[in-house]
Image (cartoon, rainbow, N blue to C red):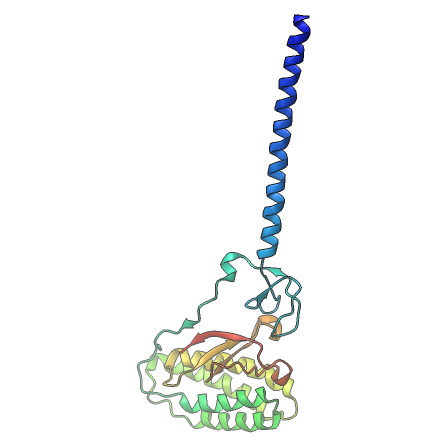
Length: 235
């Protein structure tokens, strides 16, 4: 009889411990599910082409209309700072403002889908590059300037000689923009300007341009996606 009572007590203790353990596991699972649901509710997603656009999963990107599908990490959710460019490398009085004025006129023509006006602006840029005197440039920058200017002239010629072929003009404008950016880094400018970027153009490889305004007006897509892009640098 005593053995039966002892056995019953042992079984009772074992059952109680087992129930307690199951309850603990159940509570953990419930908490994990609640935590996962809370995470999902608070999780932000971004556009594959415009990572700066955030929202709930499946919502539409305000720039290009694609669905937001990429999970946003806490670090990525923080807004990126626009990089302020350092002082120019050259200390000479040589000015590239004439080049920049022609370039900006060309940029605005492409943003307006005006291939003919883009060709005219490119021809003006070519004249400016040809006539600009480089005698004020320090000796150590003369060859670098000559190489950049020669490359810029080639792209300006392509744009100027191809009115009506705006896609071809835009391809050379992308390469011209690299030249202009290099000139700004070396010689600087008194103008307030920005370097913009469109991640959709050329698979994100070359979609940069220089602008005189914070407002995004995309020269690579024009009216098709005029506001696609963002500011990366400023002077």
